[in-house]
Amino acid sequence: MNVPVWAWFAVIGGLLVVLAFDLWIVDRGEPREFSLKQAGFWVGFYVTLAVLFGIGLWVFAGPTPAGQFIAGYLTEYSLSIDNLFVFYIIMTRFAVPKMYQHKVLLIGILMALVMRGIFIAIGAAALSNFGWLFYVFGLFLIYTAVQLVRQFGQEEHLEENAVLRWARRVLPHTDDYVGSKIMVKVDGRRLVTPLLIVMIAIGTTDLLFALDSIPAIFGLTTDAFIVFTANAFALMGLRQLYFLLGGLLQKLVYLSFGLAFILGFIGVKLILEALHSSGVSWAPAVPIWLSLSVIVVTMIVTTVVSLIKVRRDNRAGKENTTPASVEQG
Image 1: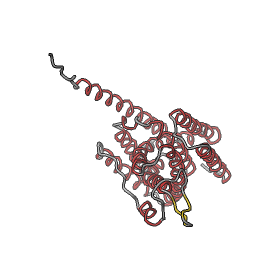
Image 2 (image 1 turned 45 degrees about the vertical axis):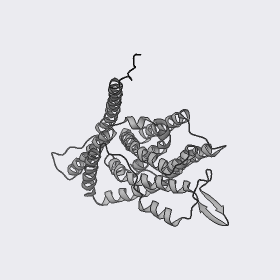
Image 3 (image 1 turned 135 degrees about the horizontal axis):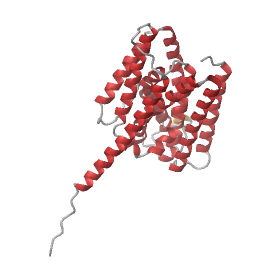
Image 4 (image 1 turned 60 degrees about the horizontal axis):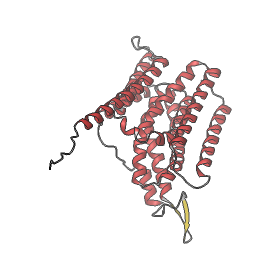
């Protein structure tokens, strides 16, 4: 899809305006916890924005780019749910007060979006010049899918990346939080607060997750504009989803299987389409409607089966609990 430069600026400018408005709402008045009602409203708002953007693509560019965007958006959003477990660990490890968590996620994910944009530009240029990278991406996604299945049941943990270790070692920082400030002046010295360290942790950790999610969306489309916008809309709605899902995350016990199936499917799709483009007659070109159907059905089945499993386990636990015996006097 040939996207004019003004369209790039218009979309990026619109996203920045929405994020600035979001940040203004968070920062006005006294800091407070993000309620479920607020989270539900903002999740609905960002999902609606994504749907309207998809409709706009359909009107101005046709059904194929629109279908690629929706499939890419759903893929990125689904894979991002797995990020929320690690975000929760980061918030807990750094003991971030709940009233400041939304700001941390907003700035951290904005940092991640900038880094993802660079990653997407490099990936798009590389794929257009080196067709064999499709095989590499496909094999990597299949490998990632196998690893997700193998790691099922293991407890999530945070491994500090090089950027985070550097930030904690080099940046002079306060020991405690100073309200919602990320920088303060103490005895004439400028110090960062732990809030900035957490933002760096969120942003850089999300970029690590992009190592599988961005190759996955390149398996659905190689259009850099669609890849970037799908990532942007998915990330923008991720913050509120963190607060909305809450305890539900712990109930999605089979999430890793669903994500593994999606990654595996897209990995196979990448390899098949690379073979098809190379003239291999038996290798089919997988249509976007099939990819979209597989993603939607997989996430629905994963969610339903997970909730049934949790309900059965809870019921079995109640049945196995025997009441305390009462002595007869």
